[in-house]
Amino acid sequence: MAEYIINIVLSVLVGLIFVIIGIRQCKSKTPVVMNTGEKPLKPEQLRDVGAWNKMHGKACIMFGIAVAFTEAVFPIVINYRDVVFSSVLFIMMFALEIMGLIANHKRLERLYRIK
Image 1: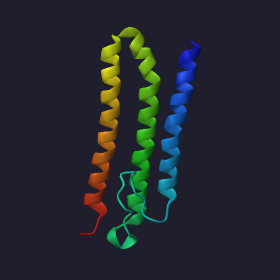
Image 2: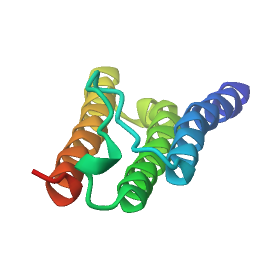
Image 3: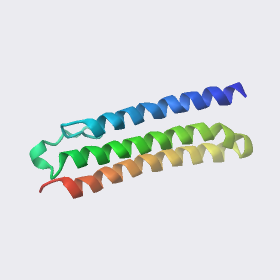
Image 4: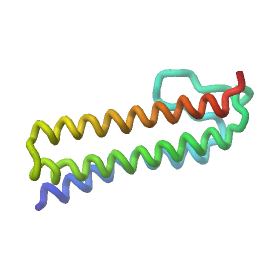
């Protein structure tokens, strides 16, 4: 039982990192950027900097919640399913979460970036 509690606490802490980053992005006055290696856009390149930041911040907050949930549930699932199946499912969930974050970033670029 102690290992579940430790896992849940650590999962929440990891998710909390992304939630804090998302909150900071929502409050930022300058355009924020995802951690993709691309350079931040200039305010002149965006239609609405505030909306850009809020949407990126919300996406990061949702990603943090999804990561915390996925990590917290994994040890419970592994007890009821095959280890290989659970591990593949765990990796696929993280990959889907990251792909969703990237897809949202691309969508926001289409909506807010001035061409």
